[in-house]
Length: 401
Image 1 (cartoon, rainbow, N blue to C red):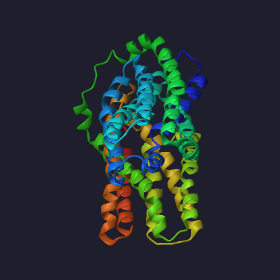
Image 2 (spheres, rainbow, N blue to C red):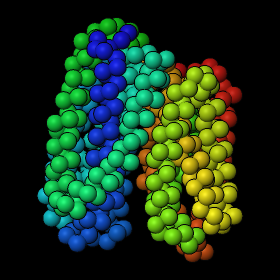
Image 3 (spheres, rainbow, N blue to C red):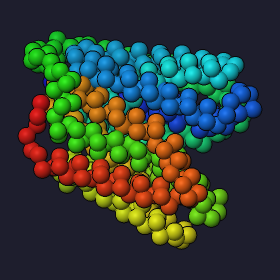
Image 4 (cartoon, rainbow, N blue to C red):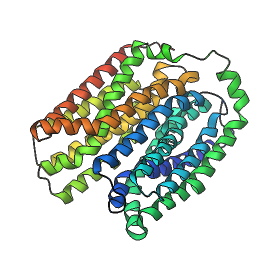
């Protein structure tokens, strides 16, 4: 079964839509928070609590969206999400207090669940088959991986020139006039093959969530990805103060952090190589996580050598880039195509919970000694636990569902 539109055009359109969605919905918060500081009353903790609310809503919506995406003709979710994105961003531009921002981020969470990787991956796998979809997922994540690299300087410039409210309005228009038409076009293409998809996908009985959740193989994957979410979110939130604590020059800190984005893209490009595609996703996960463990272990040395830190950060970025694609493909190790969206959504929920809690938990660990020594040890253990789970998965061959 294939989409009835040109596959290259499909990938280019979906990649552009993902680039815009990630840049406008996920990567704008830190800069917007700083810009709103003089206009909206609220502590730093209260602003980051807003972000956690958005992630919580994202997590809650992931399951019904993933389950729906297993059904033929369900791509209406994508244009719906683009509309919610535009409305939420436009509403954000008009808030007067922190309470209104909480309401806005309910919409942001819904928009993330309906427009970001999970529904798009489920759509591709359902319509393109496993082998072709794997290549498509690699391509899309490479392009979407540019979102942070492109949007950080773009948003900084727009906020400086136009203010944060007008910048949010521009992001709303981006979703309305770029993302929405693309997703509507994809919805129409999916609708044309909906009857064929219905015959091949929905002729089998649906699987109950309890069957998936109770299987030890799913539990191993869920724990592994939860630890990965803990690592990624915690590192993203604390890498700046960690490097400052090492007495690294602030200018060098910005340069070092900027290496993560390109390194992630390189990791995703590696996943496009034939030799990498032939490895099991769980095997790739083990390799990537062992590299992450090595990075954090070396951070314990307390070195201030800029070249060594740059190398560690690039290894970390490459490994995270690999793991992002592994996460997109992991549900295929657990289930057949007809349950992909359902299974993938259940895997995503613990990741989002860990991402929401990690920055706060790491800050509590920091307070024990007033340094990042204990938090880095915690990150080493998290990566080792995650790798152990993937080793268990690697030993299993037969799909449980």
